[in-house]
Image 1 (cartoon, rainbow, N blue to C red):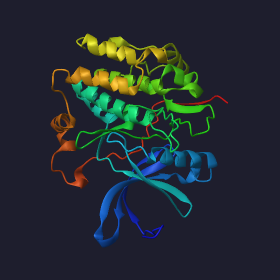
Image 2 (cartoon, helix red, strand yellow):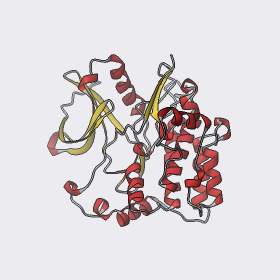
Image 3 (tube, rainbow, N blue to C red):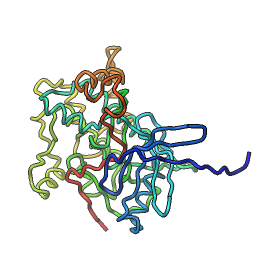
Image 4 (tube, one colour):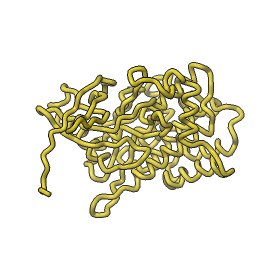
Length: 336
């Protein structure tokens, strides 16, 4: 076999799903030889940023960073390419719903997501983060990947009930130059992320996942999002959490897990996402049974039959593609 193979793969854009942030995301059909086809997602850099070297580097770094993260609970990146000067990368297509949309749906119908399912989703996200945090380069050096933007918009759940983390676009890694700048959504940011982003550790992702779990259990943000930006920043720095918003019947054991995830000092949280995942899994499986992807898929079909019916044609399904474009009071700090 030759050392190099030329390919003439084509992509047929079916429709644009989302646009914002740095790029657009579209559902596309990968077309190969002999009628081979595969549905994928195409993420492109918006034309207004194409001439900005900093934005181009960030876009390319996202693709490179996630390319070798192969995990059931992480949206897979297949390819980074450029056509006529326009960068794009090809991702796993996720046909499902964002966790944000799921919780907001429950809020609208005044229903709570069952706590075991909330813990199950959090445990899968913790496993994905534990995997990302543990990655090493070809020389065996830790990559020190930190997602930095764990939030309900960046956790997708597909038709089969599999939660998947997406959008590593603002992740920090040892392989990247640290400019002292970090982005993230204020509602889910750790105290240290808005005070000393240059010193972030994996504990910051644990905190953000704790806020996500709080959101799933309560249908509310843990902070008062109606305040001014400066007041919201003060809430984050002081680690204000309104535990009164949680259900009164929330099991004490689950509350203690949540409080440890949301500890003010990073060293007071779980030692790693792998440790956290074990604790969450023990909580839901210690009796020998508990929720699975099948349980979650069946639950979604039962409460959202119009979106997750078993045999709906593709044209009738609401689709969500990798790439979170909700601003949600996003913070960008420049600490040069």
